[in-house]
Length: 97
Image (tube, rainbow, N blue to C red; front, side):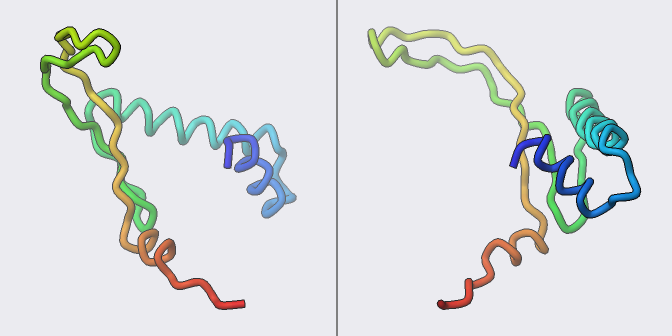
């Protein structure tokens, strides 16, 4: 699902709201999550999961084409861990047809 599809789903469930308002709300939520992660904070949405930032230390990598050793700088990567409710929902056995 992409962001525009999410906005449409929310608009269908809430016909009393304007689609542009829903889009602004979704953008605000995503911007706040990204902003918090940029500061190094952890964002937890109960029942859904937690977003955090993990540090990857500097290392010596290898160019797969030439085999030459290449220095790779330290970097920070986003990490998502699902919540218990989400895991249970995803691992529920589907009904047999």
